[in-house]
Image 1 (tube, rainbow, N blue to C red):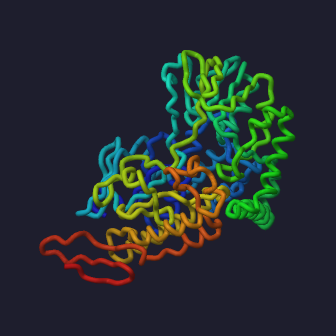
Image 2: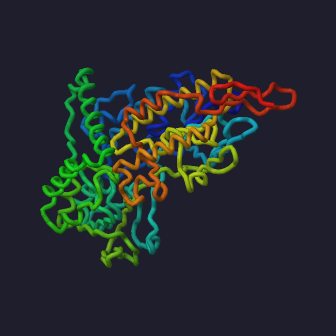
Image 3: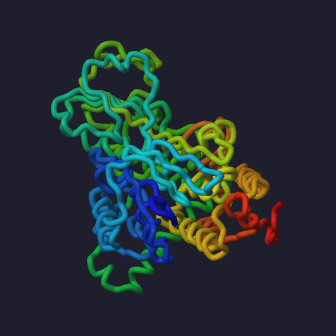
Length: 500
């Protein structure tokens, strides 16, 4: 690469970004930089510091394959995951690659030079290839509630928890009942004077078998692999049910039994009972959420918040409650572009995705050469562990970059017909799964009626597809011809030709 240029720039130093640098270095890519807007690594596990934050995937599945960890419990808390990520980054010498406090504001593809121009808070730099590792849980979603901006007390999102606000003896209004609320409501209930939980949609909640893992387990590799395998195949079995909704009744019965045992009050139980199939929304597991809702100082309001007037939070059904603090548990803008990405024709990724959000194997987007999304659209099921998908993607990304380097090319772009064929097959497969039995809205639908989150097949198939890199799916080329220079070499569909 020329002076001042980088071969690969990784955006974000969370779980995906850390894994990306390690994978690239192992493949012989030493000219790699990581641009991280925060002063610390950790990504979503750095940002989400709300009480009770933890992983809802078994801990032994939530680790890199190259860095097994002696997890203390079946489900790891946020503090242990964050420590694991930072320790892994340090052990692999990532400190030399990460540029902290550098936020990428814009990226533009330079068609003449065949590289990306990155405008950052620390100036402008270029990179031959870019890996966007900001993840889908990056940008909090703030609801548009009339009057919320005039509330006289503290208001904050669960993903930006304000630890300077003491909730002891305070009246707290919680807006939303997603995965974060399920975790933090039981934590704040004992010290708050009152907790009012506004629920627009009830959740399916399974029991959470969170138990201490014996230290001896991690000292015996064979036993550890067997235990991890048990967790993997349990997740895959649930995934099978989600892909074939007719098999779901036993799982739904388990969730209903969990609700009946946890909530004695019939009226409250009725309000907490979903009217949709299990798996339509994100799967949640908890043994503490339902009991917290039965406490004398907690009140569930099965209605969305319509407005805020002074210190009153008002539900769509007319419910009015006074609050000292408002906590927004309203999730994330899943899949939103983290910054302005301008492709080959100058169009931004956000504009391209306004009507049709798609990517080839959740990794490459046609019209955006030398760019990878880690992870991108339609890569997760309700049961696939993030590290598994990310490592499979990285195998694919490394294969692409090795081909780029070995072939003497400087750019590659997925063929639009290949991307379209993949998208058509994926959406067709999704139609028979439980993920698409909703009304075309909710967590999985980044566009109205279009599922932009879920992978409709097994985790095994996901890994297999991403481990089979096909160069013929891309157009390969060198920079445009200049006067007196050698002609352009382009490779498409397995053929080499000289372009005039």
